[in-house]
Image 1 (cartoon, rainbow, N blue to C red):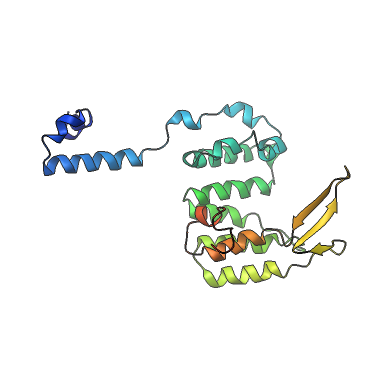
Image 2: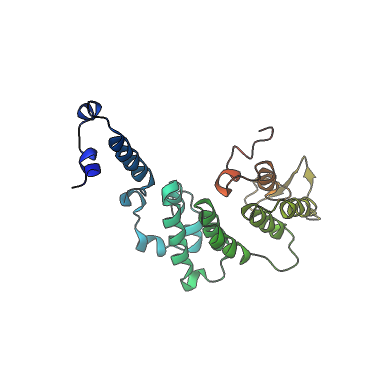
Length: 219
């Protein structure tokens, strides 16, 4: 057993009486190693077969099920991205760009930036892009690639997206009625608040820039 390994199992009271430079170096190495360890495997364990058997809506849109509870743990975001990739490989998920986007977001938050950008590029929509999705994709990629001019241009393009003719926009929101009779309010243009956060926190990681702190005006 190495001296560092012995130190890891030595009572603190004993260490206090024999501090040497070699001891300090070993302790620092042990601390760094501990910080670099991934989350315990049990933290990211899910019933993979059951999740893969869900319908696309259940897998992606159920806030209490599907991949989302797993991804709420930062150390499990890559396993969650891999789970989405496995789900997307099934015929029932063919062409589901929403799942591609969510996998991309998880990889971006976990630092897999090149993989995230490649996935994001797969979600561009053909014209007419009535909801301004493509400028949102452009803005997300610009943030990840640290391209401020491209981000500013994407923000301007998104802000210029016209509201649907039938929509009544007031104070940045438009209202519509669901078949159930419930009235919903949606910000217009969609995702502009997120892109504003990207501009506000440009230079920070995707994980930080998409967080609520960056989405708070006056930050």
